[in-house]
Image (tube, rainbow, N blue to C red):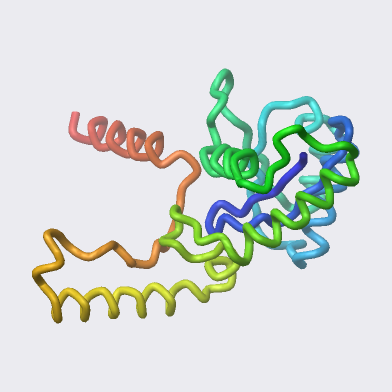
Length: 196
């Protein structure tokens, strides 16, 4: 499975299933995503693993032509993209995933099509405050989260005995980072260098 995930909204932008891995398939996936979502000229970063299709010269040329900045997983770090790792776990553990696999590539594609529809438009994602990736991607989450916060605060005001702590955090998440722990450590190291 080839898949492009927007890490801000967690929406699946584009996906394809093939029987083998190749640079031609990777190029097709990225091209389809750019055309489908009218992204040509938009500043984009594509973070991927270090596989040969993603490092192939023709794929590099395509990224440059489309104005996409490339980013790769750190060497020997298997979980460098926690967003895609979490998504693949969701794919494997969703109750509708066939325990005995797929009988054909067409069956796999049909199942994945249904999964993507569900994931993007119905799945209340815990990492983005229980809104759907579609709602976050299209900015609908701000109003939803503001209304939830208001409802929770009114409920707490009306029945304070039911609350031992603060209400659930429904604040809008304005930005995300690929590896926030690493970036936090880098910022702390930079502060230390400035102090010495």
